[in-house]
Image 1 (cartoon, rainbow, N blue to C red):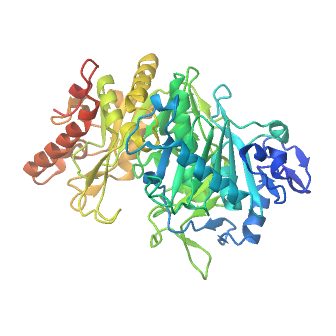
Image 2 (cartoon, helix red, strand yellow):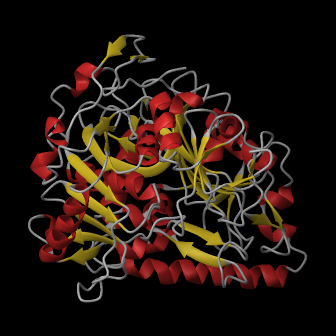
Image 3 (spheres, rainbow, N blue to C red):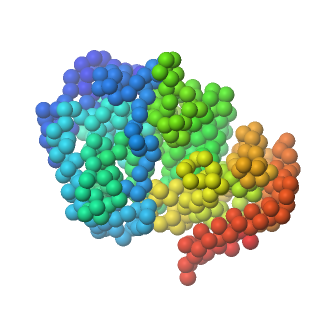
Length: 557
């Protein structure tokens, strides 16, 4: 099925939404699309704008940018960078935005002069480029707050990636007078050998100039920098206008009952929101305004580690022409991907347009959520599979954003390691976490939204001793939340963490619902639970300020 139209080709193409046909000239130049206003005045190089998937595949093949697997899906290797480079991300420190930014290790300041120097380096590179690719699209499914975004890349697969991830224009008329609200110039082939004298971390740079509405990327080929770059900007713009932005997935039932799934990588955010009984709104980035919730994106970006048709059929079946694999092992003889081979990276990914999922919500919007689910993967094995949170506890756990890394996922990790990421996405928050927490509190109160904590981690002991929660039991917890049957359970307060835990729930064993009962050594459980509780408390100290409402009392005892 064709889903994009081309503005550059001389052939007839089809837009799937309207089935309208368009014919366009061969290609345009930099000045045609206003790139000269950015300093890119290279009119001798063709500029390919918003290519169709078929044309992208042709360019990817002719440019030798990757390979095609047996079923025709394109696969790319992004080199030594198989994930984001958070230590190389910077925001230009200047008025007025500098007074809003949550400065620190996540939002590092860059001097305006350094940005200008790197920007000139990027522009000079593009002025000598042989070809360029431009994607113009949107971020945000609500037209009232939607942002027009532009990506300038030197490689076809990078346009392919953002074509998958962002909201695609419906027809050519939308692009006639397209004026981007924000532009990302991806100069992956450019690095900065002078990084030390510039006061930067490495030769890689990801710099955002909020006042100039432009960002530059250099030294890394990883596509996720573009996706998360715009997400970070949405996390800046929307909350300052009273709109909640969220790192979560979302789906909606046939009766209009929507649900949010917050969670860090590895907690099941993408998997659990893909439910054959419900419509998928989106898998990663959403907003919540006075009308309800809405997706920021036009596609999904799923991990492929251990992917199979049996355990995640929606994602597995979405891998077909139009989708794009990143850093996955491909068998040289069969041209088939092996998702269990993670010799390249455990962060293998697939991006695909959301219409590759059969039961997706076509307008990417829904009403105010009935339920909000915080997902955690507790590798210490002390949290219950599901717990109901009070409004105060919801704020505490939202600001905490707890999950745990397990042995083997990263070099040097030999035992469970707690990770606290504010709002379940601290890496993408330009503003202080309490700003998002205050907005969430208001929304939850206004719409009487239920909040639950669901643990997809270990039971019966820590990682290496206990067992991972079965997907069957986790699905039972999610289903009971979404259909409301969990409210029929009798609850009791957890002795260590204070939240309410159901005594019974479907066919889930009571020993699983009460983690202490599943441990052979109860004293060891108490010691481990105390250890995790103390880590929660230590992390939360950063949010306790004199004269301000504190949620510390809603945490572990």
